[in-house]
Amino acid sequence: MNPVINILLLSLLASLGTGLGGLIAVIRRPGRRTFGFLMGVTAGVMISLSFLELVNEAWEMAGYVTATVGFALGALFMFAIDVLTPHVRFGEAEVKREPRVPFSPDPEPAITLHGHRHRRRWFRNVPGPVDRRLLKTGVLVAIGIAIHNAPEGIAVGAGYMRAPEFGIFIAIAITLHNIPEGIATALPLCKSGVSRWDAFRTALLSGLTEPLGALLAALFLSTFTNLVPGALAFAGGVMTFITLDELIPMAREHGHQHMTALGIIAGAIFVFLLSGIFGV
Image (cartoon, rainbow, N blue to C red; front, side):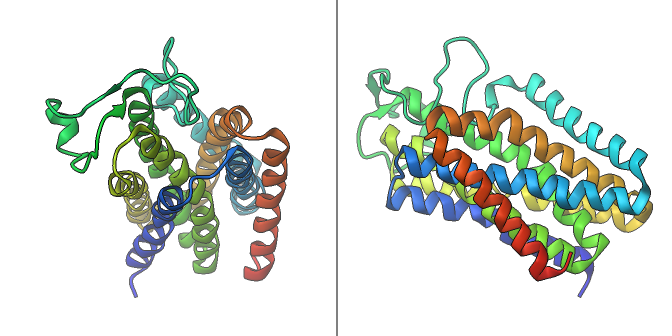
């Protein structure tokens, strides 16, 4: 089968992790300990995958200069996105006096969505009044995930172009990483008062930008194969920035600190074992 099609299918499967997380959130809302642990897992997966696999592979393929430049460009790319779109930072708004998610103790008075045409078109099954702050939080988190999932798709595309088993390994790791993100998207929406179906589909669709990034990477790298090492390091820089700037701070603030640390360790162990199983 065409490598581009394989990459698209792999990234699509990986992106469905956000939908699975959304499903978990609407079925059984996690508490602070569980939320902290799950966000720690996703952080551990990202950090380990970035340094143990992506940057290390780029270093071995093309040397330290390519690995360093690619990593720096990836991190700076995500920093630029974060600065240019501060309202969609994962887990918290970067403007003054915005909500902090997803466990706000003092929500604003509930409102209805009726009469708000742009919201009603998407959230069709609203059973009653909604919490405006949590609704806004859930939407912004979904937008933030959609934005940074596209660069994550580059990791799947570049990894598969390096070796099919490497791409499969990365896709499995990212799938696990996406599950807590889906929970973080759906949870504030559920708490805001929108229907479970609307919360689930928002989480599901927020991950579907990942195949787009993977497809663009596959098409580009199939022509410029000498850029595969740089693309791997670039993806590593993207993932590291997301982890340090968004995932860990959110997990420690809204979860349980000890459980977050244990989750990071568990995520790293998962990557180690997966790497050994796939021999990459």
